[in-house]
Image (tube, rainbow, N blue to C red; front, side, top):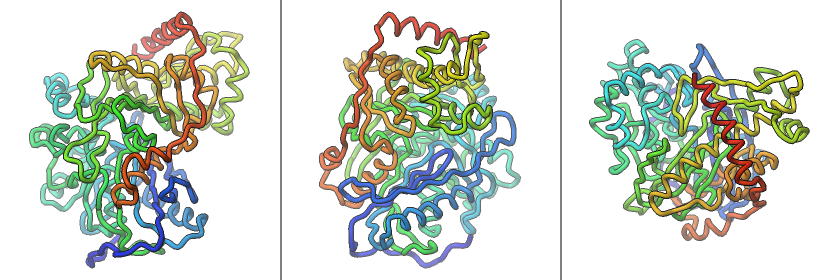
Length: 513
C-alpha cells in the first residue's frame, strides 16, 4: 500500500458536529457515530480471525485489522445515512500492548501482530527477572515484567524476523501499538504518533516524564528511531488522507487505550472513581489523579490520560484478568458448549450455585494480582451430578471472582493512602448479563453501577476526540451525558462471601501447580 506524498491540511470549517469513534478490539472492530450530545447515531461491528500458530502464541494479521476498520466505517456511515463531511473529529481506542511493525515507505506490515495475550516471551521475562531488572522496570513504568506488555514482543520480532533489527536501526521500520498503526493508515503515512496511555503499556515509557526512557530502550534493545512520538490523549494527531470513499482533512483528535478510554467514557474524572470493563478480558481501573501510586498488592500503575492543555497526566491503578468474556467464547467455540454467548446467563440461572464445580479460566496464564504466565485453565470439582448449568454458573462465578481478587488488592493499596472504594461502574458486552452483575456485586461487596450506554470504550473515544476538537465546554459537559441504568447491591453475607472466596483461592492454587 503506497502513500501519497501530498500533505493533508486541517479543514477550516465543519458543516455539522458528529464524532466518529473507532474501537479496535481483540476480537473485532466497532465503529460508532456520536453526536456531541452523546447520542449514538449508528454503530457497526465486525469480527476478524484469531491466529494461534503455536501453543501460547496469539497473532493477528494487520491487514485483516485494517480491513475490519475500513469496512466498519463504511457500514456505520451507511447505517447513519450521513455525509462523511459531517464528521468533525475521529477518536481511536484500541486493544493495548499488541504490537505491529511495518515498512515506513510502503506501509506494509513486516509480519503478524503479536497480541497482548501472547505468551512467547515468558522465558525472556523470567531471564530479566533473574537478572534483577524487575524493580528498576517497575519503578520507571509502574508495570511488571510479563509477556503481556509490548517491549518483549518488540524485542522478539527484532531478534527473530530476518534483517528487521538492521532496518529498524536505519529508520526504515515503524513499530507501534494498534493505535499508531491505524493512525499511520488513516493519515496516509504522514503521522507516526501514539498517546501517553498506550505508551504507558509498553514497558518503555517513564511514567513521570511521559517520554520514552533511554535506559529502558537499552535494556530491551529497542531502536528509538522505530518508535512513534508520544502525545497527549486529546489534540490533533493528524488528518485523513487517501481513504477510499472518505474525505481528506478530517482531524484525528483523540487516542486512548481501550481501558483508559472506558474510564473516560464512564466519566470517572475524580480521584477514587473506578470502573470495570467486561470484554475479552476484564479490567478494573481507579482514578488516582496526579499521583503516581505504587502498588504493593500486584496491581499496575498506569497513565489514564493527559488532555490537551494539561501540564501533567492523570494516573490510575489497574488490575486485569486476561480471560473474561473469552471464557464464554471458549465454551462456545472450542467446546461447542453453547451456540451463542447470550445463552450463558439463562443456562447458569438454572442452578442456585456451581455445585462445587470450579472453572479457572487461566487460558493465557493469570494476570493481576497473581502474574503467573505458566498457570493454565482448569475445570475441577466435577461429580456425576454436575451438569452443563453448573459449568455455566462456574464460568460466571470465575469472571466475577477474578475481579474480586483484583478489587481486594486495590482496596489494600487505597487503604495505605486513606481512601476507599465505594462502588464500581461497569461496562462492556458482558455487563448486560444481570446475573453476572449481581454475582459481581456479591463477591465484591460494593455497589455495581451499570450505565445506560455500556459501550463506554467507544463513548470514551468519542469524548476524548470531542475534547481534542474543542467540541465540549469541559469535563462537566461530558459528565452530564453519563446516565445510570441500574445499580446492583450486594445480597451475600460477609461470611458467605469469605467462604466462596476460600474455595476460589483453592482452585487458583491448583491452576498454578
